[in-house]
Length: 271
Length: 271
Image (cartoon, rainbow over all chains, first blue to last red; front, side, top):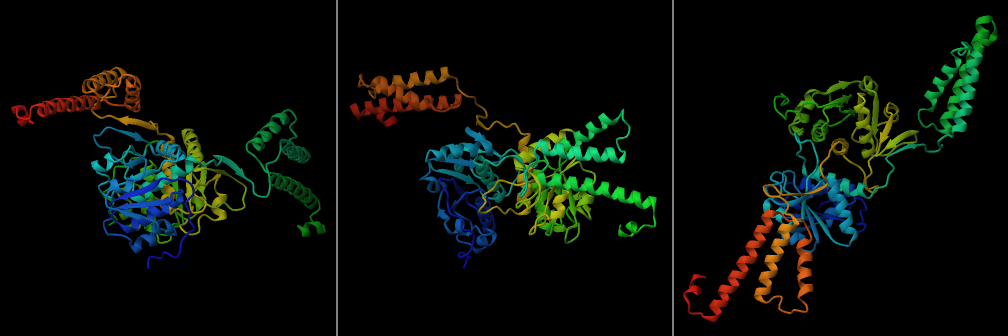
């Protein structure tokens, strides 16, 4: 058994590119590819002449639950057979040979695949065998090559990592997550009025305790304090905590003041 | 020996983020992380309390030549120690807890890290242990969290894949590769004048052979042929090949015409 009863409930959504592994060698890598595909919302896997045959139990063990992609994978004798029903084919290629062919970045390729699949055309994405990569005849079956921008001093990726980069780019091309936000959970971002209220409280206590007693310097000191507290977003809950900190520090100081003035009072024991 | 004599000549370039693996469990993963870092031009690795101690020979075997990153890795007892000399710290976190913290996408985080490092500030990037991820105290050491946009039905990445996504985003943020180009190698893109010259040659031969003999339809047919050949960029070398194809097909037809007209001539033998 290849563990086909388990795994995540990965149901294909929409028209997504087909990942085609050409002459893959290791079943472990095929499993890791399925996992990477699922990460990026790719569902359709085809294998061209897998070296050790198919199915291979090790693939399911490496798929981390992306079993259904492996269950549905199809095996083909040739690249031509694997792409016969597709309309556009891209070939990932780290070192393009002396051929005349469009070359896209991973991001450019993903954006183009989104456009092509939105036209109800079927797209395939070829990945070569682990060591040799795609040969010239494989690449001649493709409309365009995709080359990842990576450190040219160290650009070799393993098969699953190459698939992950494409799956990640495919996913992010349609993703609308805000690039920076403040996660506030149960609370909310404070308004400037609420911040002003806290700054008033703080300034009042700083006047009380003598921190701002140098009157010529006071306006500049207050401004500098304000600059600090204005720097980032603050939540309503954090402002309440800051109010509490100021109140308690001020209260502690007042109590300690009494203690220092009369060390034998019972108040001191209460501290 | 840990294979420390080999590997790629990975020399740190510029001010790049430090990758900090917090309580990593498997040496294999640490090696795979080094490889992924090198792919994206990250050079500095720190380990906080690696479970099995350090160094571990298996890490070097999984690094695919990124040995120097492992050779230079430092070990720290706590996250606080590992980040003490840094100015900004980001924590990758697939499932943010109920905390108040800025959250960035991988791309947003990479762009921000480029800005911060350009200010000569040192940046750290925390990755949690394989199973549990970063705990709440780890995350409290970070300025912001980074969460990858991935298929929410299947978002778990292994450690090296998570590092690869960040390393890839770090690299591409500064990469200026043109998103689509035509790789022409020894030749060059043909001009419209060169294309027109070919279309004239083709049309002439099609007139000669009678393909365009329906004169009322001829203008439309010629336009449709032009539409096809105008569709994509063509190189000067490809145009020469197309000229040759048209010439040879036309010549073959003429010779065959003669053969059909006079099957006993010696010309037929020459075919």
